[in-house]
Each structure stands twice: as C-alpha cells, then as structure tokens.
Image (cartoon, rainbow, N blue to C red; front, side, top):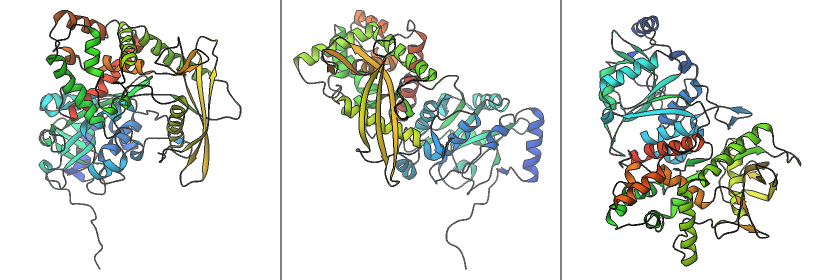
Length: 496
C-alpha cells in the first residue's frame, strides 16, 4: 500500500550529487586545489531545516555554528547553540513558517547574532564578482557564502531557497550547494553560471533581486547597547516613513532652524517608532540575596555607560533634548515618542525578555512577570547601576525563574524627560532623548540632502557625521545603519 506524502526528489541535471562517484571526484580535485577549506567547518554543523519554510534560518544556523559564534542564550539544557527555531528576533517564527523569510531579514539576523555581513543583490553585482568572492571564501575557513536563489533555473521543484556553499571547483567552474532541505535534495555540485542565473531573479514577495552574502565572524559584540527591532508588524511602516516620507517632507518644507528639522522627523511619526530601536540589557539568573556584580558585568555595564555618555556629549543630543523640552511644555503631540511607561512597567517587560534569553524560549502573554523589584546599586560610584529583579513563570511548565536585569543608572537633573524620586531624576537608560539621537545618527545620509537652505543642510550634516564620534559610539551607529540598510532594501527603499 502506498504511503502518503513524498520521499525525496530525484536530483535533476545539471546538478551532480555530492556522494556520487563523479561528485566525489570533483570534491577530491577541488580539495587538492585548496578551494574546499571552508567545507569541513560547514559539514561539521550541517543540518536539515526543521520546517519547510525555514531554509533561511537553517542556513544561517549552520554558518553561525561553523564560525563558532556564541549565541549568548540557551538552546536546550545548559547548552548555548544556534538552532533554526532560535532565530526569531527579526520575524516571528509562525510568520516565517507560513511565508518564509526575506533576503534582507536573513542578513539582518546574521548581523544581530554576531556575524559580519556583506550582502550583494544580483543587480548590485555580476557573475565575475560572485565567482571571485566564492573563490576567496572557499580558500579559507573563516568566511562562508550564503546564496538566495530560485530553484527553477536548476530544474528543481519549488521556488525561492537559501543554502550555504561548501566549496568551488575551478576547472569545471562548479560550486557545491549544501542544500538544507535534505529531505528533498542531497548536497550537489552545480555550474556557477547557472547558479548565478538562479540568484539573478526577482523575489515576488519583495520585488527585489535575490543575491548572496559573505558571512564571517565579527570580532566584537554585535551591538553594545542598541538594536533595530523589526519583529513587530509595524516596522515596515516605520521604515517607509524614515526612508521615503521624511526625505520628501524635508524637501517640501521651507526649513530654517534645527528644531524645525526635528519637528518634521518626530512630531507626527508612526506609533511604532518608539519601539523601532530598542536597547540591550545585561541579564543574569537571580541569586539569593546576591547584589554584587562580577568583573565581567561591571566591565560590560561600564562600556554601556560610556556609550550613553558619549551620546549625551554630542551637539545633536543637546538639540534633541531642547526640542523635546520645548514640545512637551506646549503640547502633547509627541506622545508616540515619550517615556510613557512607568519604571515598574518597563522593569516587568525587560524582566520577561531576560527570561526568554536565559531559558531559550519565547514566553507568551503580557503578565508573565511578578515580584518586580527595582534597586539602585553603587549610586555614589563612577558607574551606578539599576538592578531589576523579578520572578517569571513559564507558561505550561509550572516553573519559576528568578531573573536580574542590569542597566546603567540614569542620574540627571530633574526635568520633564525623566522619572523623579525625591527631587532627583533616577530611572533606566536609555531615555527618549538618547534613542532619538541615535536614530538620527543612524538614518541614511541621503535623508538630509533635500533640505533647501544650504546653511541648514551643512549644519545638519555636521551634526550627524560619524567622523568625529568616539570609536564606541561610531561602531554603535554604523551597526544600526547596516541593520537599517538590510531592512530598508527589502522594502525597495533607497538606503545609500
């Protein structure tokens, strides 16, 4: 009796199965020529995608594990490990399961998880550049190529697909595709020119070209303090507002002063703007009564505090904070930007997020945290800290996890921009002014080119340039710019 479903597919020409006699011969020859150096790291961590639409996530998991990047969060038990079900910071898994994932979001995911990413859509490259980059990566162990391609030119069934490349054979001009849909096709060799034709196609979901990425290890944390949050449904409207609407508004208005520029950008933004750039806190398991900080925790918090201090030392921050003060004193038109959450509400939210990271799962529901407590440590020291403690109940498991979240302590003179306690502004970083300043730095440079008044245009350019920023802040800004670039190009927006 026939079984329901499908058991694999026959690999059609011109592909050559890796395990065939000819495939083995091609491998042996390529290995002797030195263009299979990245293969062994990749094959050590090669996995099958866990869902039919998880090809992008599985491909990225293979590459991140091959690069020995620590995810900083648990997979199962005590083990930190990349699995395709963990890569949901840019898109909910249920959405990826039904719709797949775009080229830009795979690139953004790689960058968020500690990789250096060079992404090339096919209309920004050519077959010779592609070949040269494949040869370069195949000749070393510390970089890998991910391709986004259409299966049809390879005579394969299906549509868009992601997989890593395992090597290159120069004489035959063939590449080895380590297909992560192993339930369908095994690893196989294909002519590079045909693969180029397959990735030089349009993704119908985005209207953008497919392409390839060069992934290597980033020799520092992926972000010290800030990251773009593209997981919520409204990020597309925010991206459109920032890349399309704002440049047009700046071009159409007769602007004379910096506060007028800020009003164009921030006075009537989408409601989701306040969630677009989020901050990264220090998370640890709660220890009974232990309020001491380890040397590593103190070091990382000190770096975060340094970045925040560098932000607040910029001329741009001074303009932003003055504008916020003036707007709040006269009207309530910037409710979408304000620090409207109470400290306890913020604490509950970050406590839940911290538990997600420690337990390796996503908690559902808005009331997962209880017993929230906020303490201020080392207030009289050079680097004071806010300690948020809470108990998180994991839905369906009847288990509790104590979580501590640590952030630099915000000490300011009282103003309308902070939470006050006994006449002193004490709250959690970053404030609205911090985030809005960083977002202005991170916007594409072309955003400001339409300002009519030359003197004002020059002044804005001097405020948002990264050339004179301290190295820590400059790296933070460039990281955010790169994230925005990947996401905006998925929307077809200019980002250069």
